[in-house]
Amino acid sequence: MTRIPYTLDADDPQASPLGLIVLQTDETLEPEFSDYFSDRQFPIHVTRIPSGIEVTTNSLAEMETALPAAAGLLPSARPYRVVGYGCTSASSVIGSDRVADLVKQTCNTAEVTNPLRAATACAADLGVSKFALLSPYIEEVNIPLRRAFAESGIDMDVFGTFGEAEEAKVVRISVQSVIDAATRLGSDPSVEAVFLSCTNLRTRQAIPEIHARIGKPVLSSNQSLAWHMRRLNAGC
Image 1: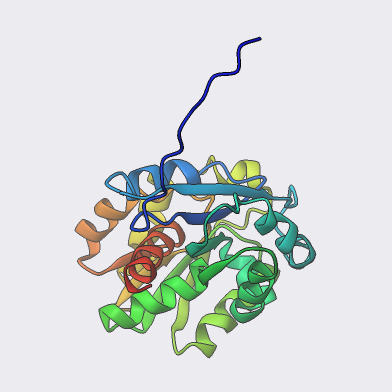
Image 2 (image 1 turned 180 degrees about the vertical axis):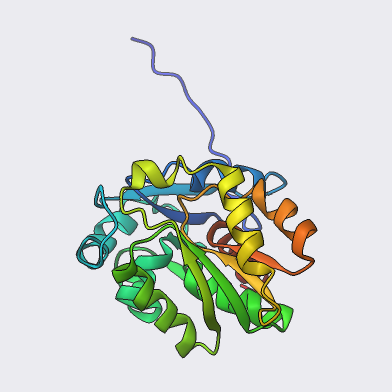
């Protein structure tokens, strides 16, 4: 064997990585993030967290104990500017502050966000607070989600759901179904915008069509999370 010398490149301090914690059952967040961050100049490192086959308040709460271990699997050679936790409903059950504390236990990051926190920030930036909510969840999951948004000053009295608990079916809900349902809800004259909840729901292609139909802002879990991570990354 011949031992060959090598040199090491220095890390670019302007290209600090972002971290993303994705549910084990999620098939949508990574592909949509590839689009939302197609122009990025920095790496995005991804880890997975165990999650239930079905979305219930119990399965969501169980992720609280798994978050530090999942965050600890992100590469640790460099500190992170922002880490995103990709679960809207679990963030409403666990709490955004608690999510941040758990991630920071094992990951050196300046900021932690999630779709709930991100959508709230995005709504404030747009100056809207009366949303129509479209979710795929069963009602026991919708209740804490709407409560969490209400505590942040966002009214979601107009809401609809596909009522699906199984993640493998959520990701396969057709884009057209999302467009039609969101258009129906968003056409209510009492709402200023629409929020499409769940990182596993395919919304990237649906958003422009919904906006064209109702003429109101349309936010989603993935779009809001990407927007907020960019915003926090720029501010670090």
